[in-house]
Length: 286
Ligand SMILES: [Zn+2]
Image (cartoon, rainbow, N blue to C red; front, top):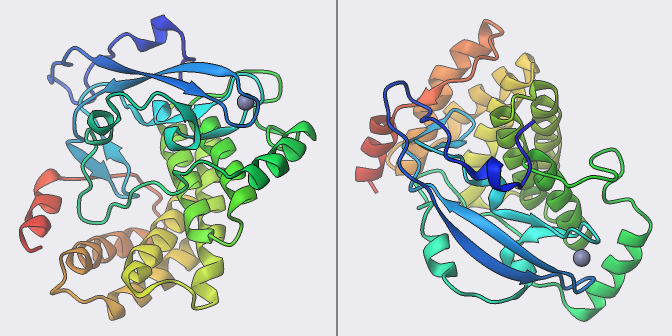
C-alpha cells in the first residue's frame, strides 16, 4: 500500500523510467472545509507535471511522483470523500492545479466535482453516521490512494446512484492507485467493480453515443486485466466492428483493441504502456 499523507511520504521518488531523473516536486496547498461535518483540512497536491504516457487501461504515467492519490480528499473526521469541488474553502491556485493533467484523446475529466446541496448533506450525515461508507475498507484509519477512490465512489454513488459510468470512473482510478501501491488483489477487485458499473448502462443501451467506444474498450480491457478473458474477447470483437476510424478517439481505441484482443485470446492479463507517439499521432488527427 502507498505511504500515508505524512511529510516523509511527500519526498520525491525516483523516476518511473530507468535513467530519467526525477524533477523536484512542488505542492499546491488547499485549505478545505468539510461540508458534512465542518472539519477543516489542509490538502497538498503534488505538481508532477503532465503524464508522459499511459497504460492500456488509460492510467496516466508520470515521470516523478504519481499525483492521483492526492487529487481526492477524505475528511479526517467523518470520512466524507470527494474531489476538492466537493468541499468548501479557499479556491486559491485551483486553476493551476487543474491544468497539471491535460486531457488527451480517450481521457475524461473525473465526475462528481460538485458541492452537495443542503438536502443531500442531511442525507449524507445520516448515512455517514451509520458507518456504511468505510465498512470493509478503512475502518478506524486514514484512507489513502485506492482506498480514497473507493470511498469517493461510495459517496458519489450515494449522491448520484443512476450515473453508472461516473461511479465506474472512481473504481477505475482506484484500480490505478492499487496498482501503483502494489496491491494486485485490490486492483482486480476495483477493475471488476468498474466493469460491473459500466456493464449496466451498456446492457440497457443507456451509454451516450460519444461514450460508446470508450466504455466498450474499458469493459474489454478491464475484463482482460481481471481475468475475464471470454468477456474481454467478446467486447474487443464488438468494438472493432463499431469504431469510426476517421475519428481520433475511434482510431486510438480501434488500434488498441486490435492489439489487446490478441492478448485476450491467449489469456494474457499483462499490463503495457501505450507509447507517447501512439497517442501523439492520434492527437494530430483531431
Ligand atoms: Zn467531515
